[in-house]
Length: 193
Image (cartoon, rainbow, N blue to C red):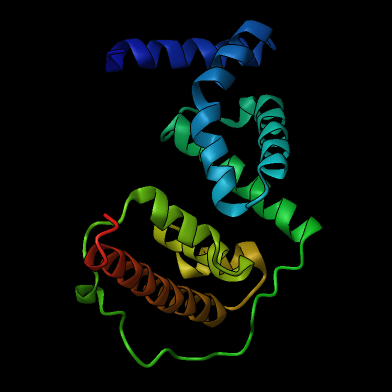
């Protein structure tokens, strides 16, 4: 779909949703739900819970569609709703165990030690396996582009705690990546690949 055609379709969906047209809502949902579900899954490891959050986020989107003023990306506006709903869900239903103690990781991750044979799915699985607080801050900062101040405001923590959580997440990811790479190399040297 060309950009101009897509923009026209997007405008149709928005206007239709403002009129509460079920077909427009369905079309908008079908177009964006896959990406937004993947976004939910980055924050919420349970697939069933992520689906629930997605449905709640789209319900809020349809209720608040009049708030979108056409400024900035419509998809970006949807992403914000989905991220906010994911964080709200985690605050309401999970103990996030965000550590408040500031611990400075005394080394920068050494990415040069890593080979480049890892797939994106492997990396996303590793991020998904991070402790909840680390995972949320890592996703918000490294993937979704939030600042430490925005993260602190969203999660009710200090900026230093956000920075600490990110630093710990990176260190833990580096450790897991190096372990994964060693496992791959051992398998290769034993003739299993």
